[in-house]
Image (tube, rainbow over all chains, first blue to last red; front, side, top):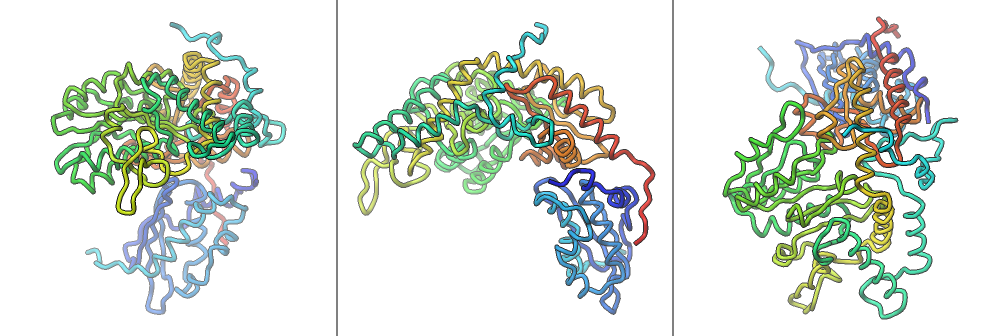
Length: 131
Length: 423
């Protein structure tokens, strides 16, 4: 059982308090939102894919526990500028490794929520452009 | 009457519960405050399970051999003990099920699908556990009946004025919890049942959170159906009870088909058995029911009145202390309207952080999440809350420990002007 000291490491709390790209993206071409039905954590990711299939920009919004929100911030920081193929190659295990502290199965779901949302978002074009 | 410490049960009864000696954290005894989800078991119940399997076990109602006779006798004695606990008239009005959820589904499917027509109304409440919402949504979709919900007062009780206005000749059944598993509210079912009967509606009470904690009298209440679970009252998992008035159960078709529930089977049909076997298809939860009877005996030896008083003292104490925590929002009404649980939320700190840190650093087990009441949480503007729920083995020093943990969580997650370091 990991202790909370390890679970809530400084760099994680830093991401929670000062997240990377929390907000919405007016130029978004793709977006997806999902929640964790067990606890109600919600994450939405909006991203702009350019013609090379690269993530030109990405923002997340949502609410939930430290793990769900900090992991979203860490994920977007990591994959900014990467291609869709690189996103696909970034596995659940990679996400857990990026997060760092070892998580119990229930908390892994919190950590993997943004990863799942991003995996869907790159395949979810926004149908109607907002005017 | 003022609540005095003399109303607390003796701490020595903790010794009956081996699991409470578990050391989840070095040097700290387990503080188990997740009793609304499932309680722990005393030695007497654990021994009852062993005794059945070591000495008295065989399938019930079938064999002529000694062990089958013994297990049948004990299984039926368990039924009669349940009958006495809730003061039902006949033991054939006691159906053993898998639990509260199975009991409610039995009524929704067997009674509901037979009796509900398009335009009929099912009246439930916004504070129900999913197990008293989803089965009715399913039966409404099948029958064309309409679901209505009693709203809350601002302090988290049922709005009885609206309840009475919602009742009409179209209302066929009212499905309500006696105690909310999230708000802790004790609902005034003694007042709600006659109002429903006055318009010709039946009443099903989800008593999962009240039978373990308060005296229950189905005859005095004149309730039509009452459902509860063994594992929330010191008993094993896998056994629960549906009480139903004999005339209603008699008129209902069997729910599950199979062995035991039949009188005669031909290749082209069957005739159902009499009550209660009619609703107990397949091999029933034999050992769990017998051990549940041991749990009832344990509870009755202490006394449900005494247990309720103990929980009231703890709840008042916890409520007073939690009320002083800045930024903490208590869900539900004042202590005088509530049973032994308190859910709370902070605007800035998610429930998961509380459950995690309370567990990892303080050895306190609480529940974080929506507690199977998503619609209620949405109504309260929350996605999750933290719940501390008490039982007869909890004490005030455990609430002190909870409060100590809450203060630590607040300090840990208070904004500190942190800056993310770029990778």
